[in-house]
Image (cartoon, rainbow, N blue to C red; front, side, top):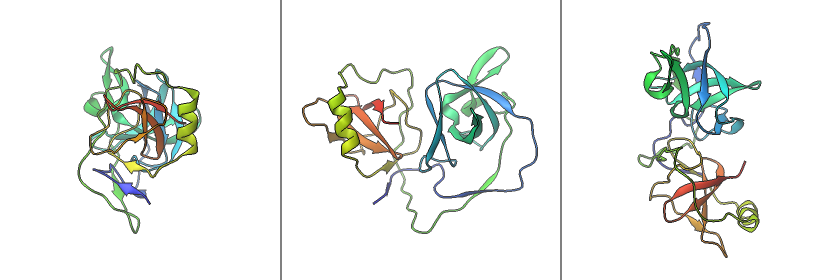
Amino acid sequence: MIRMIPTLAAAGALTALGLPAFAQATANATVDLNIRAGAGPAYEVVGMIPQGEPVEVAGCLDPATWCEVTHDGVTGWASGGYLTAIVETTPVVIYENADAAGITTVTYDPTLPDGTVTLNGAVIAADPSAEGTSLEITDGAITYLNDNPIDPIYLDGEVVLGAGLPETVVLTPIPDSMLAYANINGQQVVVEPDTRRVAYIAR
């Protein structure tokens, strides 16, 4: 069963509306950042941009929460909150500065598939500079997480190390450990219960 929580940036297939040809801009990822098959957290992860590496940006939605990118031969969508571009010699986050960074705005017509449910609410607290946890993540904890998958919960935002999960997300304890885990946007993650921060992402 798929449980959809809070504002899904885009759930279901997105259909382009006559995209014009335009020059691509270049940005950098501030974290290890997922590339997804569509503009939203419910879409499959098809690649990853390592922290600090450049990526070509074809355009972003307005606001620039999701941007169409190409990295290492993989084209898909990445969260604009974790992409920076240079504006007057200073790196700025695309999400807040798409126009100044020369990022083209792309318009789409979202189409929700039958049976898709969207609810209002929780958002992943994006703080990529925060440390995930001071607790030891053992091989046993990772093995348990991989061997005991749970149903995904879809939140607005992207899964990155150090990001905080809202209180609405129920965490599942990992036996013989002070850690817990959850399946967020289709990815199993280890979480420190006290801070609710993502400490490990199973890729």
